Image (cartoon, rainbow, N blue to C red; front, side):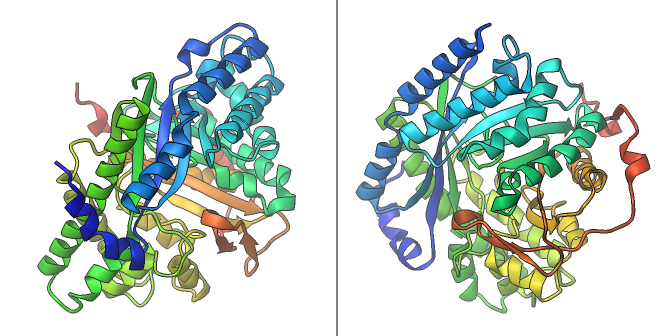
Length: 454
């Protein structure tokens, strides 16, 4: 059982080490909203979201006051909209109308983001899937709080290269549609392999079809807490290093478990999972990169970086799973560039390249995340980068993702500014050699041999 003494123990972490609950995410099924008329569908969607999530933000604030635990974001995830709109959406404008409905509902209930403007196309695309995907650039340009994701592959099905090729074009179009805002739309768009159904983090959150009608998922964070703990064992053995990370992750996850249970009871919604990720912010002292430096690297990107990140990710998971019976989502260490001041400094110092980041994604939670690239990067090159990252996820039986931002009008050496949790980022160099002939092949890359486990 969780008790108040455990909360008291974390006061120092909250006050001095940037410990927070990064998000309470309410997952809502929209399957019962399906209608053959798009206007009726939008009405049902708006009504259900407002009814189910009307008390979410106030509940979060009440829990913050009760336990003095910062809850940074209150969010909503919904059933992938390509499924919900299949019966009535005949053109991209219909999906844009649904996106506007989601945005209006999110604003009415006061949440930061709403995720689920999504399509699951790991093996093939329906007409509805393709319509939604082609509507993404406009949908993200005309909304403020809607987040979009597309799952293009899995270990069981292989990689849908037709979808990967299309997503390269969609990322570029989204960048162009929001060029006046440093291509901000791309910060709300992620491409997945092995996307989980219960991820509370944006931009990739959606409410899986196997979930209950509504569910509470909580994402915790605490890079600053881990870094401070490691400062006390500087120079010690790997055994002591690992034990310290595990114990710290346990304490951080227990805070999330407390908040999740409280939110579940107050809202009358089942508790789903704790996502025990180390999610950095642009704030000084809240950086995964700083943890890697404390482990012994001059900068992320130095030799040994992948090994250090593997160690960190594994110990965070080992500590976290002892603190909660229901761990899910992504869970581990995030390495977004724009959201982590230490990663930004590593890029600016010349220590961290796109290729090294890709290697690091083999052992971390997600993938190539919040990376700004030159605005003239070809769609085929973006598709190639997506394909590389999807292959890592497929072969290693893990979730991987790509959130690239081709900043229109910007080149290497320039910077994009998003503000808030999204931060800022230097434009990173992209390999200029072509992969166009590879990307334009049609069909699927087959699943790996070790996927056949039935």
